[in-house]
Image (spheres, rainbow, N blue to C red):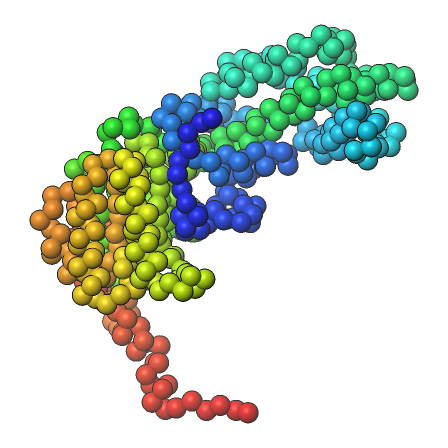
Amino acid sequence: MKPLLEIDEQSRADLGLMGDLRNSPLFKLFDHAYTRGGMQYLQQLFLNPLSSEEEIKIRIRMFSYLSAIDLDFPFPSHLFDTLERYMQHSQAQEQEREAIYLQDKEIEDGVFAMLHLLHKVESFFHSDAAMKAVGLEELVTSVLSILSLPSLQPILGVSNSKALSYSSIVAYDTLFRSIAWTEIRTLLQYLYRLDAYLAVGKIASKPGWTLPTVLPRATGVLRANGLYYPTIKGAVANSFEFSKEKRLLFLTGANMAGKSTFLRSLALALYIAHLGFPVPADSMEFSVLDGIFTTINLPDDLGMGASHFYVEVLRVKDVVESLRAGKSIFVIFDELFRGTNVKDAMEATIAVSRRFLQSENSHFVISSHIVEAADALREEGTIGFQFLPTKMEGHHPVYTYTLEDGVSDDRHGMLIIQNEQILSILEKGVTHEI
């Protein structure tokens, strides 16, 4: 089994990867599969990021090849709905009354669809596009092995005729749904995989997307240029870099300055990179990690009666236990310890940040409004300080969403309240009509 990247439920929720992926704006960016089976396999890929340097490299090489040849799904997509119904059950299952019997017309349609598909499959998998494919060698070999079955040779050796006798249809049906039922079902699964791979390859060739470069795990590098959040129209791109010499980013900025969106774009790009998929950036290189932990929208745990602060503490504990296990992880805390008073939050932020820095092969981002904590952390040489600025146009804040070096003490909460005339409304009183 391929080693997978560890990502927990909270992190998946922060990245919008919970529930039915078909409704996820992020998944829809990649979901250009032609078949239902291709879409389902793409979902499996999307939910299982890898943690193997070599496996991710194989994926990236494959998508690079598919992007370069710009190939559409080479089989008629309309055949697959018919074939799924037709191949849903074997003849043995029907005889054992474990399945609904197919009508004669459904059998005839299924036989013709299968004959048509098998000829198309044979033609494509003997073409240069398949035989010279990079990263698809195992899939191509498996398909060719099925095509070489002795029972299929009489079919593949003759032209696909539209006229078949009743006895021929019965014979083909016996072949497809009895003799070679298991192998043909497997063949369909390989075609669905190809459909999913081609869909991702198409994204790699689009402007604003790039295939990442995988670096040796021990280098501890994460670097991206022109990174943006792909589901926001006109999103502002930013660049960043982590290394063993800069393991923690202390991020500041006013409310609405774009901190949470930047944090999501950062975690999302790293997640997608571990899929071996193209990422929304001009360029990206990264060292493979064991896990991603994000804490961006952390809810109170009302079920266990826990306060927001206690849930935050438990979240930090999860990260610490992962670090103690020797794992290389990427960690995001958006407004760490917001559930307690400012003094405790500052002391805890400083203490936890310093402990995090002891982990050489992990990276951390902590956003905070407590800019005073930055003064105590400046003496640590492995912390970077950046902020998202606010520019004032008269009495109205304007946000650039572009990272700058340093620490921001922008606070515009009262200004926004005044601009919305909240206090004026309260002073005048509120009239309720009954």
